[in-house]
Image 1 (cartoon, rainbow over the protein chains, first blue to last red):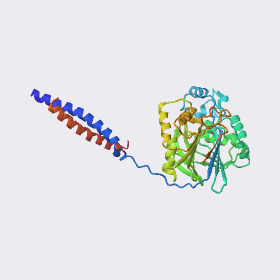
Image 2 (image 1 turned 45 degrees about the horizontal axis):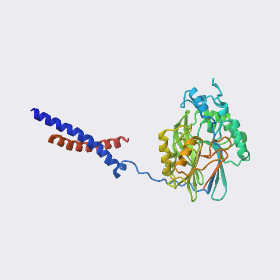
Image 3 (image 1 turned 90 degrees about the horizontal axis):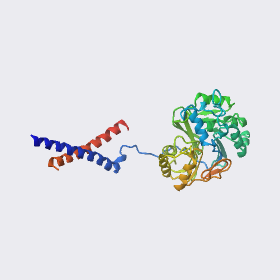
Image 4 (image 1 turned 30 degrees about the horizontal axis):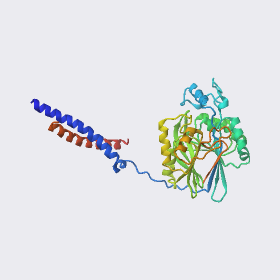
Length: 360
Length: 32
């Protein structure tokens, strides 16, 4: 009886060891076999034809949304962190009403804005003002330095495209409207009531085009240009960001973004899955939101590595990409367009205020 | 190492392989 017990126990022990080896071993073999992708849906290139344009030239009006990271982070921490409603932050000008800690570090506010000059196939031009900065004085100063004020007054700019509701991209709206109150404006589909009220209070008298709420969707704008809305939660209680795709003839898709909160990988992948020609990414411009506060985490290295797989021919990054990230891109051998570090931009590793980039 | 222990390992490996595929099937069914 005792011998049988030992035998049974030996068998069970062997089965436990064998079971573990069998399970883990199969996992290893399976993950290195073609079967591993059997349950993953096949990634198909998109087929939406947005037409073609000849060239895209972008002038960085301002990429310095703030000038001192420590001050910005201190203000955010003082108000309760990154998930707190941005309209309650102690910043000028929109955060001020009703805020007991009004206007902390007003000198720290800058703003983000860029002018996109698109040459169509018939050599005519479309001008898009991407975002409208933050601090009124700084935004106005940059607009004047780049001739945006005159272009707005004379009606050259076809529309104002606000990438998302964040303070540094949107709160400078009165400056644009000072020169062109009836400009056509495009915004994402999930603005909060404070944001919608701010548009009214800023004296907006033009046509407002709003994306469909909560719906990821492509919006063709003119030949060779389309907008895509990404309904995603963003820090400082903002929801949704839209970004632009350009199909440049004989080059490929150029992707232009404000902050790219959807992530650069999602942005590129959406072009691939949606657009005809999306499998030929050519260039990217904008804040790529990797290390906006100039910190670094090993997981960001994965993003840097992943971007390489898209094989962009020209990368024009700045703003929330982070100088550290731009330097990592350069180290990785990516074709990053360098800047001149003028007008309070800090580093030549990326495109700064007053710099331009052309695709192709 | 007894003969029964060896037979246990053989049976265990078989069970482990089957268990892994059941696991993968369940994951795919729940859409994980």
